[in-house]
Image 1 (spheres, rainbow, N blue to C red):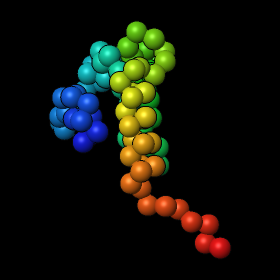
Image 2 (image 1 turned 30 degrees about the vertical axis):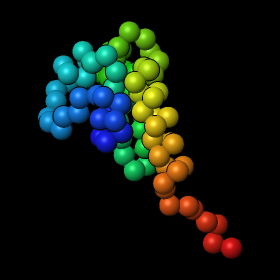
Image 3 (image 1 turned 90 degrees about the horizontal axis):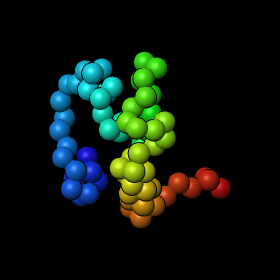
Image 4 (image 1 turned 45 degrees about the vertical axis):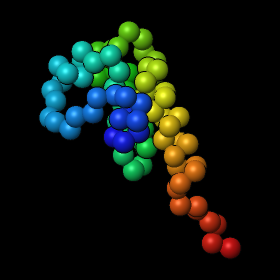
Amino acid sequence: MDLARGRGLVVREEPFTRFDVHTADECFLTGTACDIMPVVECDGRQIGTTRQMGPITAKMIEDYRELARTSGMPITSGD
């Protein structure tokens, strides 16, 4: 959420409906296992104008990877 705000995006944490997803310009999910995952279809309906990741989602992935690279905890092999 901080990364999105840093890009000047409006961030709200609130319930949403399928209609909100179906009419969105872009959609992505976040989580521990997937970091940021683009969503281009929901219930067989295309989200946005193409079946490809949108430019905001691409920038968010780029920002997240940079943040993880520069401030994340290093993973060691345990050797």
